Image (cartoon, rainbow, N blue to C red; front, side, top):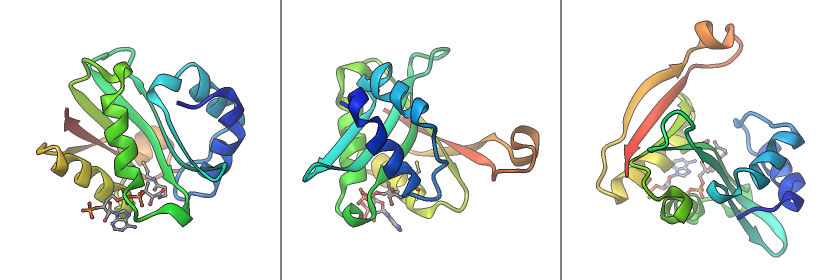
Length: 152
Ligand SMILES: CC(C)(COP(=O)(O)OP(=O)(O)OC[C@H]1O[C@@H](n2cnc3c(N)ncnc32)[C@H](O)[C@@H]1OP(=O)(O)O)[C@@H](O)C(=O)NCCC(=O)NCCS
């Protein structure tokens, strides 16, 4: 679980992990404190190398929403992304959640592969539908975000 002191390291990792949207330092501080029970920080030799942010949807507490996943480029391809997601759904703060959701742009193949692999390992089917659309929700400034849903 992250602490407030981890905020700057998280902001730095996300900024170094395109195509993720960058966050304000303040956003990451809130995640590291108010939402820490549904966030995961991975460190190696004192450096932040992995991060998952999430929360229980206020309107749908049965939904565990994963906001961002980032693994430092030096630490990719070793199963860390999957390991963090596995850990997240086992947390006491995830108890009772029946669905994991996240949103992914069509072209983010690494992210689709990660969530498909997570679903496959659990014997679950991933379903996909547009959630925030380019024109209607981003005023043309951002690709459509597709919601991936995985039963837990
Ligand atoms: C996406 C990301 C988190 C994956 O982290 P990772 O620790 O390298 O992922 P893992 O090693 O756990 O791999 C999980 C699965 O995804 C696949 N995968 C991961 N990166 C991939 C890539 N670039 N291309 C193809 N497949 C990839 C792996 O092969 C594995 O699947 P498998 O079990 O079927 O072999 C990392 O690449 C990253 O931080 N990218 C930049 C930020 C981003 O796009 N985040 C996702 C948005 S939510």
